[in-house]
Image (cartoon, rainbow, N blue to C red):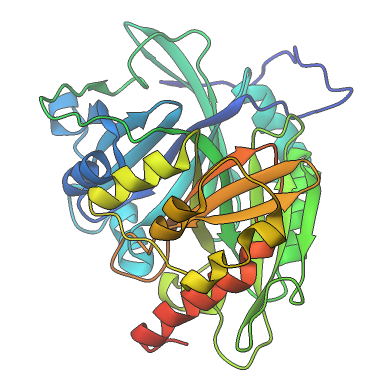
Length: 376
């Protein structure tokens, strides 16, 4: 492993000074990586990919990498007390630490971000093994979340140097999840615009959508959100902050229990949401539900859709339309002990938006969960 200090820029910076090819991986710090990996395999249809731990010479932490199509989750736990990973879990519970971004030149990406005001997390570092080399670098973002730039054009190994193939007999069938559609961050009141500017200035993202408390509100709670996207649209980061309401909003609840800003949910895409959600439900994944009356006027609100209403109603799948088409979406309940992170399953049929027409029904469903938890 060696640090890189300089690298010639080979990028075309005329249009997009920070080209990003897509999401490389998402790393979660969790209290029991082995059991978490089994959960994501058995419940969400991921397969074993790679492992790092005592057997690979790593005496600090253990990581299991699971994969489904273009989605890679890295589940990491400490092997001793008194570690930074353990402190992170003690404070936040299980949650996202790293959103890794796949780039052609990790040194270039790091240098561009740093000169635009980023705070360094990891200087450009070469990691090598018999399969070639990977260059990684990283910057801090909201809370304790970091973005790591991953350059892997000279690597043909299973995942990263330091990992070995994780071969297991148990690899359940995929549920049809394809790629990360977007990842949502919750930030403190008054900090949304700060982070919007950060993504604009440091990573060259553009704001493509904005929702205020008139758009995202119920009788009791509200929040505000702005959606940031990179140049090619492959990376989308909506950023939420709480808004004044009669009771504590879902963002307030998240911030209370996560004890910081952080990733609220990961939206993953599918080409057949009815089949995917049926499979997830049958494997034990629990979803938020809206009242069945939501479906009584569904076609009046969104127009004609390809899907039959009945299976959507049975599964609790929501539908919304924009100028480009429509989308189908559903949200899991939280997937760890604290009421913090959850997943969204989304199928886009032309739509590029985020389900504005479903906000009220969805937030009322979240409020029902909050009421059961005594946190509304």
